[in-house]
Length: 394
Image 1 (cartoon, rainbow, N blue to C red):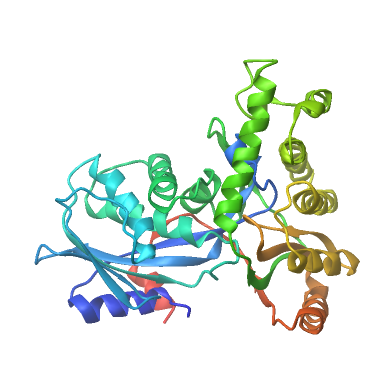
Image 2 (image 1 turned 135 degrees about the horizontal axis):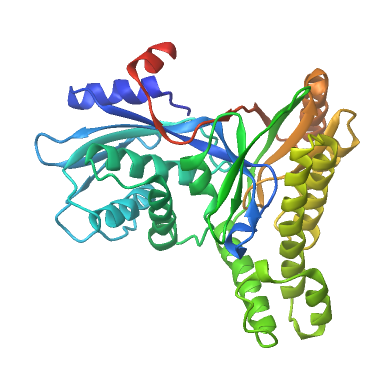
């Protein structure tokens, strides 16, 4: 079920009878650069017009309570205790990790919080980073801790690593916190240097096609891919200690030492090295406003994710195959961790309807599943929702 900022604000007032601080934390897309972030490469994300909304205020009764609209469930936290992960409910660990980090920076006052959003879960739009970043931002504002956005990004990532158990890269949290409306971010995941580039879509639209499937073991498989990359780096370090990550490796070096790799390590490393170069080439495409070349690189990325990195699935491959055959679609690929979720497509505006109809009908016929379609716009990162903005959504 989707929840609007009005829903979140209304629930907060019903439960606590006080006016809250209201914060919006967006989900994100990633145009190109998948699974490169934890390999210290480049990514190209942007925040979108789907998000998680937080209503928060100091607790006059001294009892900290967090209420999830999605689960219709409240959780109480004693801020004086040591903050540790809990087994149930699992959703609260995304938030407890943030509290743990913020307590290291200053005193947190007891608070009330209600949150909910409209990011499709399991679609690869990073609802988890949205939850972590929005909660961190709101607590930072409420307690006047004056922590800068980039530090909040690192705290949100720490929470996912240590309280949720997913060793994600920095991209999702960075995009949710740092994005700029109408722009993409070129982010260097090693130095965290970044720049904004306007995305001039002109006659094209960004269309997300959701398979509505999420295959099991995605988190463990995600961590396995990361370990395979790390083992590949360790093998190459024997020849050059200066190599710290796949960012320091070129394709020629990989092929030179191919016989030394075991299992799927070489394929994983080859995909990442190629993708790091692809992102930089795609950024040049944007500077030249060459969307067709950019779209071709998206197709290349999907091929690598499917055949070398093996994080696609039959449903995602089907979507990309349909897109590639459809006139007016100049780029498509799976997006996110993999094993289900969305494809991102660059589609001519005047054929969006026919593309969507062709894809949904063929998908229904082949898989018996009703796809979901989202047309997205690029938005700012985490921000406070003003009363005027809140009234505008009523």
